[in-house]
Image (cartoon, rainbow, N blue to C red; front, side, top):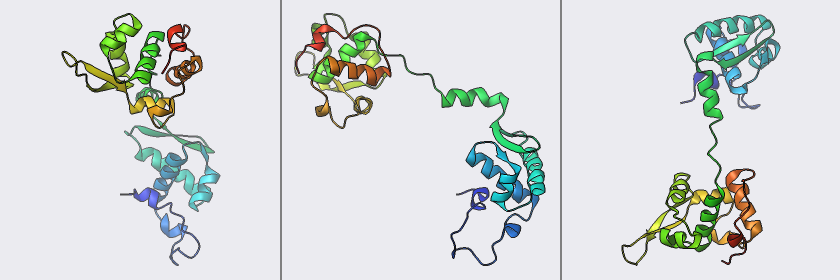
Length: 222
């Protein structure tokens, strides 16, 4: 349901407005005018002058000032509050919850992928599906921890099981991998090269990654 305060700001196109609709009728009470101010402050999300509010709502500057005082009282005990002086007003979060909002709007960025993680991801992307044993053999190290980190980031997942002894898990890339690479399907991956690995770095680390691309991957084949 659309809040009444938002509906009250509806501006009909010419010919659609009821004949008896007018600002005086629409904002006849102090509470109505306070709700109109609330809706504009919340929607526009910037400091607003009393004059601008008066023009938008269709009331006097004095009415705006009284509506602001009323709204400030109505918001008492809420997470939002008004900040205003003799000419401007804005709606903000109260100091008690401001840090929560800031953390939500600017969440901690995931840690950058290490060169070993990038190398492992490249091997999986170009040679998938493949088992951890195949990864260990190609990289010459145990890839268990790296696989856990990549899986935790949603970049790789188990896509099946091999027919060999023990039916080891087969790993492949995910839709999140495609999203970060900016491609529709795995077939759109660029030919494996140094440039391709640089693209990995840009896509997954949003900048630079310490260390150079592994030489064996930079000159590998699909």
